[in-house]
Every structure is written in structure tokens, then in C-alpha cells.
Amino acid sequence: MKAFRLEELEIERATNDGAYLQFLRERNMSVGLYALDAGAADPQQPHGQDEVYFVVSGRASITVGMETTLVARGSVVYVPAGVPHKFHHITEDLRVMVVFSPPEG
Image (cartoon, rainbow, N blue to C red):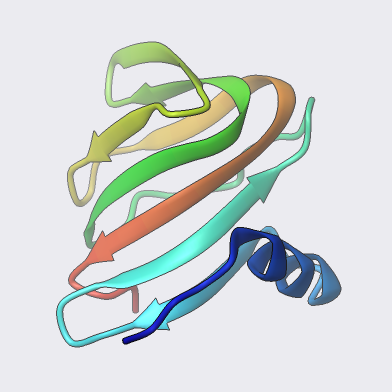
């Protein structure tokens, strides 16, 4: 079994000065913690993998393709591989768990 504590992952991510921390990588998926502070710009480009976002905390909008929705704690968003997507109008520090399948390159 592999088990993780969100508080510890957040400390590790912040210590490494990165917006993204991959903390699990397996044959068919990878999982990471993505952080964007209030007012930040999301620099993402489309990925070659399907993604699922689970919003752990914060508030923002996300645009996937041509659709936009508000997200907050508890929101889950699926993004198909290759589709442009960005978080924006981040009004509260955003922390998002990201699952890639297959694993992120």
C-alpha cells in the first residue's frame, strides 16, 4: 500500500519551489498535486494523457475546450487528452489533485 498525507505533500511541493509535485507513478497512471495562488496565471499546455482534476481547496474557473465552469473544494473535472484547458480567475489559493492516465511523460 502507498498512503499520502496532503499536508506533507504540500510541504514537499512548496520546498521544491514548484507548482506541481508528482507523488505517485504507476504503470497506468500518475498522480500529482498542482498549486496556483490567487491571481496566478495557469501556464498549462494540452497534455497527451487524459486527466482528472479533484479540487482539494480554493476557488477558480476552468475552461476545457470551449466550456467554462466554476470549481471549488470537492469539484471534479475530466479533461480528455489533447484538449486545451486552463484554470483562471483564481480567487482563492487553488490546490488540485491531478490524475493522469497513462502516466504523465
